[in-house]
Every structure is written in structure tokens, then in C-alpha cells.
Image 1: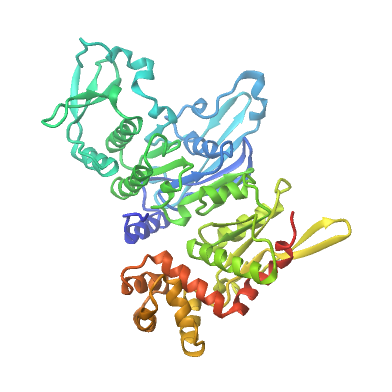
Image 2: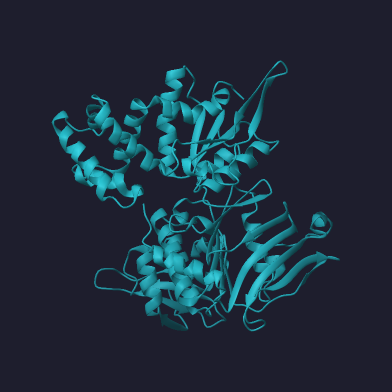
Length: 514
């Protein structure tokens, strides 16, 4: 599943943050001491930020820290104190870098929130802040304050049609006509419910008969569209009550409204779908008192936090490298008589996150198995990517080491390496074309068509990341992943030396059970 957000929009929003072209913007939060965090820093490099992590990892703590420095947010909304039972709050402190053009035209300003002498002390700033908690998806029938809307004789005090921007956004997120929705006001403060008017096709119905996710989307979009420009939007568990597709579309809406209204959005999530539209730098992972920047899917997070029964974890830069690792590791284990079972492979969204998460995991006293990062060959000569030898202690009399970083051969992208190897093999290895054709699930009479596609695309392709998709289009629209797997399998068959080069640095880890 791919996002509909254009790369040019992502680039433009990054540029705007770097240029500090906001009237109000939360640029950085430093958790000096707050719950399980000490001296941890989160940079908001993109105006829509996702916070991911297992339950109890501190996602909501970071969300609350972002809210805390703003005048309209009551500290106890996220950090309530219950007398002597919360003495741990003593000396909590959060530091901020904030853009506020009304106070200073060109640079960030520093602010602090600290908990001293049984109360919060804040250099609070003025900004419109909207907070959407998990309770937003509570069915209307379970919300006691809405009981006044129940009864056959109920009539609303007034009705408001949804505005055109709200209707357009709700339709895009939910994939259904939203023109018939309206807000029904009680006449008592801001208390209201949503309803759908009767149409030629459907009878009218109130929010008491909405899906929880449907009402949540309408409420979030309505309030954001009514909010001031440059507002801060905070959302807990964005996917709560939503279909995965609607979750992705809601994040796409956030990116669009960040561009249109200059708002900043921070949300917590357990959903991989919520991360699809976001660039790598827009995601922060919290676990074990640490925060790391970079995409991390749920399966990878379970591996890092020891929630899987593994003996080794392999972390890669992206999905393609994940496939490379899976196929080549099976080939290597079969060749050397090693046990492939219990070895988990997960993508982490970039070389630096793969390296950093691997090293943080291996250094943790709570880890139950070791990890290694498999990186592209072009990282081999970059500063900061020098492998470290890790000691394995199976017993007092038996110790060994392995390299925490391993590299795919070559000095460029693995796609380029594999295509080049296949092109060479087509000339030098008589059986390779037949092997590749079979791996593509094609009949043998299509061998020449396969050869022509590979050779032609090697000349016309301008981005090796797209070449397998293009070859698939040539061969009766085979899926990109099928083509990727066929080429990787054929490469592993024809060039076993490349595979040994990848996995020999961690062979001692593969033969051990930790």
C-alpha cells in the first residue's frame, strides 16, 4: 500500500521547518527527567510526527510533554499527582525550543516546565492546542453527557451543516458521501452530536448509530478545520476505531492540512498503516527509556523489545533488503548446515536506525538474544558504520565474537549489484537464464523475452530501485516482489561467494543458541 502524498509536498514541508517559516512551531523537546526518561531529546523535523512504541513505553508521556508548555493545557491532563503516591514527580523537568514569531522574529526561544514543590512551574506560551484522546471513539450511547440527546421527543437547539473543507476531507478519509452530515447543538455550551440527514437512498440517523471511527473522523476534521492556523494538534492512538485504510488516509489529511493551515500534528500509534505516508524522519520510537528517530514497524518493535521467541534478530534498511536477507540467509544456512529457525528478520527504515537499534538492543541488560544489522554496501566506507565485535559467551569455557554490522557486497545499492551480477551471468553461466525464467514462474519458451527485458532495462532504467517493477511490466505485469525474489534467488544460486561475504561475519552467532 502506497501513500497518495507527493514527494514534492514532503520536501516542501521539510524545507519549511528547516527555514523556520512558521509563526508558531514546537521544534524540540528535551526530557531532562520525566517518568522513565532522562536526558532524551525529540526533534520535530517534520510538521506531522508519529510516536510509536509498545504499551507503557512513554508515547503518551512525550505527547504530554509537547502539550505541557502551552497555556491552554492543564498539566494534570497528562501528569496528574495523587498526593504522597506520586513522589516520583519531584524534580521532573522538560526543556523546549519553540518558534514564536510574535516574541522573536527569526530564532527559536527556550522554555522550561518543571515540577517543584508540589506544582508545575511553566514559562508557558500562547498557542491554539487541540487534544484528541482515546475517549473520542467511545460510542455516543456510553457517554453520559450525551444522555440529554436521547428520547423520541428530542429536538436540537440548532443545526449546523458541515463546511465544504470538512465534507471533502471526511469523504476522502471514510470513502463515503459526507454531504448529509450535520452537527446538532444542545444549546448548552459546546455540547453537540453529529447526525446524518435523510436522503432518497437512506433514512436519517444520529451519532448514536454511527460507527465509533466514523464519528471520530468527523469530530477531528471538524475541529481542525475550525482551529487557528499554526495550531498544535495532539492525537492519542490515531488508529483507534478506524479501518487501516482510513488510518492511512487520516495521516494523509494531516499532511495536507499541515501544508494548508501550517498546523503541527503529533500522534501516537501502534499501526504500521499510520506510518506509510510519513518520511523516515517523522517517526520516533520509544522503548526502555530511550527514543530513536526512524520508522519501525510493529513486528520489528516486538523483536527489539524481546516480545518474540527468537535466538537472533537481523535488522535491515528497507523491505528490499529484508527480502535479500531472507533468501540469502536460507541459502547460506543450507550450504553450511546451520539452523535457520529462530532467526527473525525485520526492516527498520534506513541504515542509521538499523545500526542504532541494533546497538541499543545488544547493549541492553534485558535483551534475550543478539541482533545484527545488514546494510547496503555503500555504507561500508561511511563514517559511523564501522562494525563492532560483540562477545558471545555460551559458557565459561566457550566464548566467541561476531560483527554487529554486516554488508551486502558492492559499493552501491543492492538492486544495482544484483542486476549487474545477473547481466554478467547471462553471458558466462549457461544455466542462469533458465533458472531465472523458472524463478519468475514463466514457461521456458519465454527465456529470450526475459533476456531482452533485463538487457533493455539495464540501459533505459534511470533508478535501480524501480528496475524490478519495470521488468515485471515487460513480462505480462508480474508483481514487483515476485520479480525481486526471482532475481535475488538466481543471484544467490550463481554467486555463492557474495552470500558468504554477507553472512560469514556473523557465522559464529548463527551457530550459537543464546
